[in-house]
Length: 526
Image (tube, rainbow, N blue to C red; front, side):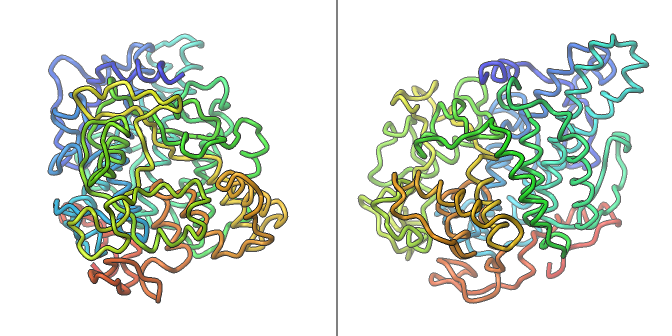
C-alpha cells in the first residue's frame, strides 16, 4: 500500500547524516550521539534505513524542501533525483525545451554543456550519494555483521530481503551512471566509508557488474504481490535488466537483444501487470492504483514534499492561459513546452488520446525560448485523481501526490517489439504488443500497423513514454542524438537546430572529481 511507504518516509533517518562520502563535497554534517553501530545494532531500524534509500529517489534532504539538502553546491529543489534525471534525459532532446535562464538550463537546451554545468554535477553527485548510502546499508546487513550482533534467524531473514532491495537500488543508480557518464568511479560495500580515491571502472565492466548484480538478486526480491507498494520486486529487476540489454550495443559494442526480449517476456508472462485502460490515469494523483506501473518513485503532497520530482513536472508545464487549479496545484512555473518536432509525431492528433497539448494562446513554433506561449504546453502529469478529486495538498503549496513511473508495462511491450523488429524475437508477438498500445491510444484497432519498422518503434516510444526519462537513451541507440540530419528546435544552439559532435552522447565528469581523483579520466571531447 502507498500509505505504508508514506508513513515510513515520515521517519527521521539520522543515520544517513553520519556517513562520510568518498566525495568530500557532499558536505554531510553528522549528528552528535548517533552512529552507524548504534542504529544497526537494532534489527528494527533496518526498515527505517531502507526507506531512506528509497526516499533518495524522491526527497532532497531530511528537513523538507526548505531545509539543507543532501547535495551541496546546487539549489535543493534542483538536486532531486527525478528532476536532474529528467533534465539530462529529456531536456536536450526533441521532446521539450525549457524557457528558464537558471544556470544549466540554456546549456542543456542547446546541447552545449561543460563539466561545470550545474545539472550535470547535480546528477553525478546525487547518483554517488545514493550509491554511498546503499553500500553502507549492504555492508551493515551482511551475514558477518548480523552474526556479530547476534540477531535472531527471523530478523536475519527479514534483513536479507532488505539487503537485496538495497542492491537493486544501487544497481539502478549505477545504471544511470553507466548511461549518462560512461567510465566512472566505482565503489561497493567492500570499500569502507571514508576519504579515499575510488578506482575507475570502464563502461563495459560496469555493464557486467550491473548485469551480475541483477541476475543474482532478481529471484530473491519479492514478487509484485504481496510486495509493499513502491518497493523493488522481481519484475523491477527484470525491467532494469531489459533496459540494460536493450542498450548493450551502445554500452559494450555487443548487442544483447535476445536477452532483452527474454526478460520482457518473463515480466509479461508473470501476469502481475496489465495496461491501464485510460492513458491519462497513469500520470494522476492516484496512479498508485495502476496495474501497469512496475516500479514507481513515490511522492506525496503532505509527507514527501520536494520542489523536484513530479511537483516539478506538473508545475513547470503550466503557464500562459492555463488555470493552475485545473491541474490540482496553485502555481504555474511557465517553463516546459513541447518542440514542434514532437507535436508532429502525432499524425492523427485529434484521435490519439496521448495528444494532450494545451494550445490555447500557444503557437506551435518556438522562436523565443523565454516566451512561454512559443511551443505547445504539455500538462501530462496532473495532481488530480482519476475520480476528479484534487491531490492531498493544494491549498497553500504546489506539492503533488503523483508517483513517477520509473518502469511500466508499456515500455516492456515496446522493448520486446523493438527486439522483434530487429530480428531477435517473435515478430508476430512483438507486433501484437506494439498494437496494444495503439489500440489504447486510439480506442480501436483502426490505426494498427501490420509490421512496424524501427522508425515506427522509435516514434511510438516517444508518443507513449514522452517525459519519462527515456528519450536521450533512445535517440543515442538509434544514432540520432548528436550528429546527422535529425534536428530539432535549439539543438546546437540555433532556432532551427544543427548537428553537434558525437562526444556529447556522454556527459562529462565533474572537474573537481578529476582533480581530487587521479584514477579518473575525462570523457573524450571535454
